[in-house]
Length: 346
Image (cartoon, rainbow, N blue to C red):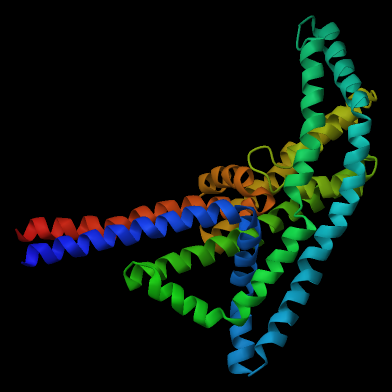
């Protein structure tokens, strides 16, 4: 009799799990375009929820007004500078696309001079043209992946408002319905908080530091439109592996194409030696102090995140990898250790 009850309960459990998965798949298919907005709202919520709780619970402020105030402050502090930077870069990127032939010609000239001087073959004209086409095609993609659309920003704040107003009940519901031990739910929450804060604050600060150091060098070396390249360096500094080199290497190429060889060499030395050092030092000091995130998790996480979510993937790409590793530990804690205990008892 008991076996029949167990089997019946198991069937009901499997049925409900299948039903939940089916509904989750349907909802994901219909709403996946809002994932960047949801992730953006989660990011702002993690950064603002403690202030929200303090003002509404300790100071007894009105929840709706407090949420609106915090959202307005975040717009002024974060989104307004990003919007101004986007406006600056969009016109310059359009100019770069329209004058991409000049960049290709500059590359061809540099390669030709090097081949004549050292009697070697570096790149064929066909490869140079392909490189130029790749650069031309990548510029709009980089710009599109870097800045959220107005619609995405609208839905970020639309979702964020309700998350802030209903923060306590939302957190209690998550705590109640996540099918894990209480200690593992706490670990999951702490990991999300640490990773979001580390990436949402740490990565832009590191990139900004590189951009400021880079701007000093651009002004000293007489780079044309140094503040434009400051913006490029800031954005490029957030990207993995190549980072700010996407800014100072093209500047050096432009110098070489204009026969300003010493400026080109100085730019490369300053870029790899000074700007690159700022990146390495701050990533291993600031980011480690904020979240103690392994550099490999950051690098590969950003690559994954940019492909999946666009610019917001800078934050949630590393989070995905960290959560994957954390879930493996939680699985071991929830199930593997229990099985070992059972075997030991038996």
